[in-house]
Length: 391
Ligand SMILES: Nc1ncnc2c1ncn2[C@@H]1O[C@H](COP(=O)(O)OP(=O)(O)OP(=O)(O)O)[C@@H](O)[C@H]1O
Ligand SMILES: [Mg+2]
Image 1 (tube, rainbow, N blue to C red):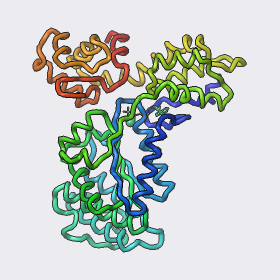
Image 2 (cartoon, protein in one colour):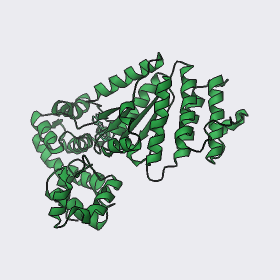
Image 3 (cartoon, rainbow, N blue to C red):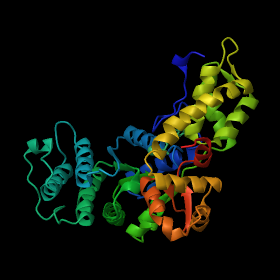
Image 4 (cartoon, helix red, strand yellow):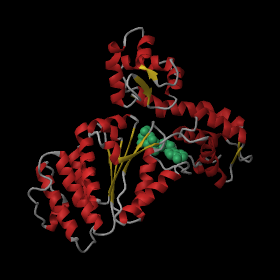
């Protein structure tokens, strides 16, 4: 079929042509915003799940919903090079300026920007353009030198400014597992104060399953502050809709057999569904306008190649040779998660001899530890890839 009209969208954070299976998350988020607006607070959220399940897409969707209600928002993507104080200053700045009308800074927004000035001074950040308002820093606010206290002061200032407008502020942190423990702890402490004061600041973090343990390690009460939601693969009915709905709108049909075949190969993982959808579409012949089982068979080698090159390979290549051997040993045992002890046995050694490789794989975000003594892949169907490729 015409590749120009191909609706499927494999990629990072790309909005799918049909966003299915996330109605509950979207509904609950919308309710949380409404609660905040009338002074009933709600919990911040953590979306956790494997690679390619649609966490980033959901964060984008949350920003759209919040923006429609007039809430200011700011998105952070954590990574090894994140300059945390700078991002935090940007986050406060965006929210405070959006909470002010063009002509006039509200009194609380003005105060918030002064708190931000102190924060900038303390963390040696360059002055922001809001300096043109001629605001002075407020000594003693957000300049203590501890991230816990200073982030708390900033978020309190944002929360008060938002509450005075019957709005709230949304901050999202994607790839949150990459935050350092002190940064993660600062968010937890700040949100604790925010929730004690009932202020409308919502933080939604997204990341790999390892995020759960990391938050618990940062502050033991993190569990009570956040609602943790696991983002999963789609069930068969949802996966059918993810494939068939976008095509139907363009007058292309999927047969039941073709849908079953793709669902079997992808196990309903969103990234894989988009990739197979894209290649199956390209293989459809005109004028039949139908994806048959034979179309899926024809498209499969291309879809797998594009997954191998675009999804698996670039991550696999980041691992050292020794870590790759570890991954292969895991794959030889099946999809996982596996007992660390058994992976070591498959390598013909003991667990402690290969713990550097295991730790490196967790740091890279290729693996996570579901429980003590266990190890799993963060990439769905990674075992199959590892058996498919030879190096
Ligand atoms: N609910 C959904 N229905 C159909 N397709 C989806 C859905 N959610 C996400 N996708 C598709 O899946 C792909 C991956 O989405 P996204 O980048 O949000 O995943 P992620 O969980 O953030 O992955 P990573 O952990 O690698 O960052 C995108 O191509 C997106 O269009
Ligand atoms: Mg993502």
